[in-house]
Structures are given as C-alpha cells and as structure tokens.
Image 1 (cartoon, one colour):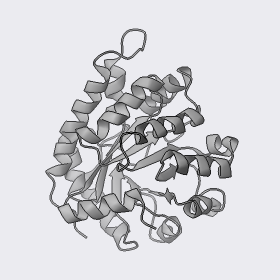
Image 2 (cartoon, rainbow, N blue to C red):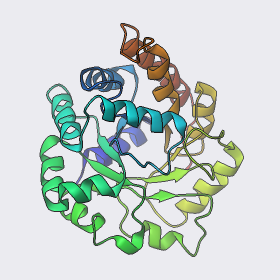
Image 3 (spheres, rainbow, N blue to C red):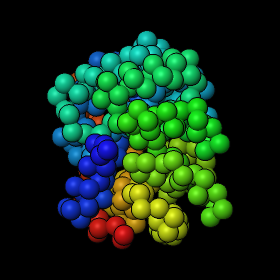
Length: 278
C-alpha cells in the first residue's frame, strides 16, 4: 500500500529536492482560523502538514507550542474536532499528506480502534506519538499500520546504534530526527551534527529522514534540507500566529497571511537546497 506520504517523497525524489514539513496546532487560536491556516499551507509551499493534537501536558514541547495547545483547548478544541478539521481540509485538498502529532492519552481516551477508523476516514495519513516507545508498539503503532496509517517514529541525538533498530522496526512514512537534546523551540540545530546523524540513520533504513526542532529561518531550513530528506518547522509558525493576535488573543486579519508568508520564505529556503544525498 502506498500512502500519500510515500507518494509525496517519491515525487520529491524525482524533482531532486527535500520536503518542507510544517507544524501547526489544531484549533489555534480558534477552530475556524486554524482551518484557514492549514488550507493556506500547501499553496504557500508546505509539502506535508503536521497538525498538533492539543493536550494539557505536552512534555516534549517548549513554551510556544504549549501555549498554542492551551489557546486551542480554551477555544474548545478536542480530538474529535481535530478530525473534523482534517475532513474540512480534505474537501479541497486530497493530495497533501496530513500527520497528527501529539501524545497517547487523548487517543487512549477516545478509544484506539475507533480513533483509527475515524482518523483514516477523515483523511489522516500518519501519526507521530511522542510518548509511546517501541516497547509499546502493540498499543497503537501496529494497529495503526494495519489501519493503513503511517506510524512515524522519533530518533534523537541520544538514540545510539544499539537502540536505532528498535526505533525503526515498525516505523513507516519517514523517520523524524529531533535535532537537539531538549524541548521544541529551545535551541538552534547544529547542521554539521545533523548531517552526521542523518547519515548514520540512513545506514539503518531506506526511509526518508526529516529533521525538526531548532529550525526558524530560511537559511537554517536550507542547510538542514541539504543533509536530510525534509525540514520540519513548527515553533516559528506557532509564534507567527501568536504575534498576529490582538490584545485579547483573538485572530486578526493578519493571522493567516503571517503564517503563509513565513511558510513561503521557509519553503524557498528548502527548495534552494541541493538534493539530499541518498
């Protein structure tokens, strides 16, 4: 079975370029604006869209993404409404891959089997669940794969060669390499170290490797894209949303444009990179 994620990376390989992956939080700052933002991303240059599932205890996320999740929860966002948002996106776009990123608790409460059926029906292509290690693959990873969803695993600077095979065993779609040791938005990625890490991961897998955490500028995105199959940007986009809000934290006429303009400049950085080495 070929997923939208597989098809996207195959097409990008033909074009000789890396993917630009964007992250935004579902429901931030409100459900309608969030959907408008997501709809604007592909035209601005996003190849794959990660959507955060708001959660009250996002332990891998820095202050910006934590705040985005709280704004979304305050606006009434739920996991069910997140899936509705994906359905809304799919009415106009049946090609761009959608990956839901977050934590296991909301899915567990929703019910794993029901969630997977609903997510697939809504048009979700993959999942990144940051707090489920490979030892818990029977909880969600393997059922997700059987349901036709890619399960995308995180590798980090502390994932050594002994640990990598377990991390990669049931991973599909792509491998998400976390470029820093720490939370989102807390530091900048070291492109030399990233290049070495990506090369090491590629010795263990034929899957594309995308790099996230610590990428905020077109120059940084370009440098990462020269070493990897994709560059992931989240905190910078979430900050663009926050900075566009009014004094009461509500969306303004600038909100969607602020994100789209930043995505466009970052996408140009990624597209200016040399093809990642295979």
